Amino acid sequence: MTSIGVIDYGMGNLHSLAKALEKVAPQIAPSARVVVSADPAALAACQRLVLPGVGGVRACMDELQQRGLDAFVRDAATRVPLLGICLGMQVLLDTSRENGGVAALGIIPGSVERFPDPPPAAAGEQRLKVPEMGWNRVRQARAHPLWAGIEDGCRFYFVHSYYAAPTRPADTLGVTEYGRDFASAIGRDNIAGVQFHPEKSQAAGLRLLANFVSWNGETQP
Image (cartoon, rainbow, N blue to C red; front, side, top):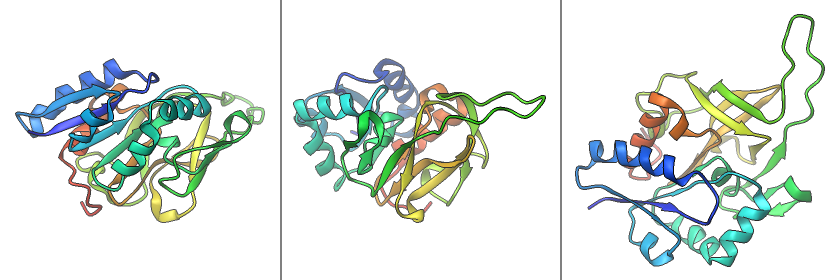
């Protein structure tokens, strides 16, 4: 039986994410089940793990540490396919500038930066706002199994004020423009992360989640 574990540390829209996974998982493996849990033992029995999250990095890391899930995620990242979503992607990196600077999980080298305040809009144009909130395009920076069947430049749903800046260019899977180009999808080896919310991104988001459920952790499509 294939099990997809959703890591519950008290932050994140777990219900909609679990429902989206429950919709696509049986299409990949009829006996697949989705496990939402804060118990490392229950999560360790899963073949794939999703780290969701909304909110601030400091609160996220505090919750993970208090529940003993920070060490679990670092260890799991060496063994099984792992997908970070939104804040769950950001904490995969080394540090975040949020809250004056916070050490994160350090699984993928890099930092999390804040969007600068946007400049005034040109005449007839709408001024960008921080946070970015809404639909935006993702350019696929390199081939990856998560992109299977998803058109390059497809739109996904974003809500964020900070963005990932991986140290290695090869760790950028997707790029989005919002005042500047930023890494909207990252990954290396069996680890991947997306800044957008696939569970809110309609058909393309469901396809990405289905691709994750079928992903064996290898980076070649």
